[in-house]
Length: 191
Image 1: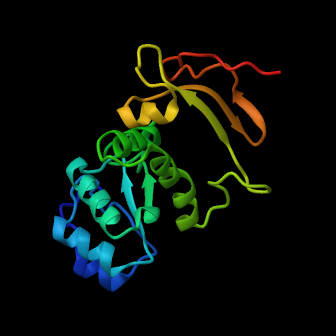
Image 2: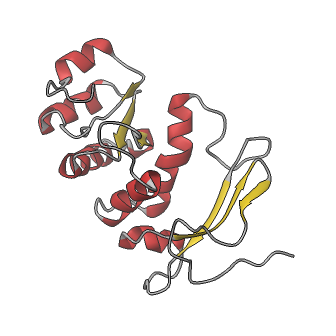
């Protein structure tokens, strides 16, 4: 809970055997590095969640451990906001930027962690683009001044992309550009 300095270490987590190990890299205090590895190896079917209020160094440990065990598909993302850390604007985009830009994850894998993997482990419909699945869409790209060629490269560089369009339930909720991010280098055109 917020304000607590007691960490649920590997001994507790391995006994509880959750479907998703939330805040594995802290929120902000993580369990010790060796215990992160014990949890990842000891719960091979569990989702492993990192959130925006993470300990950044421990998140690198999580990614390294998941990569070493061939289990990056178990990584899920959360923002844990509003919470004890406050509200983190564009928290999921920031998580993706950190994973791709600092932890060295392929940007598409980082996006998959935020979408499909998170939906799968939480048993929420959607998160993937397939016929019949619910899908909200975001069109994004590099902001003016970024050296990135596209949205994925923006993430790889650690650049927060500009949002050009958001569609929810088949309806545009942002049709030209988000006022909450710097403008993308290009504007979408619709026919």
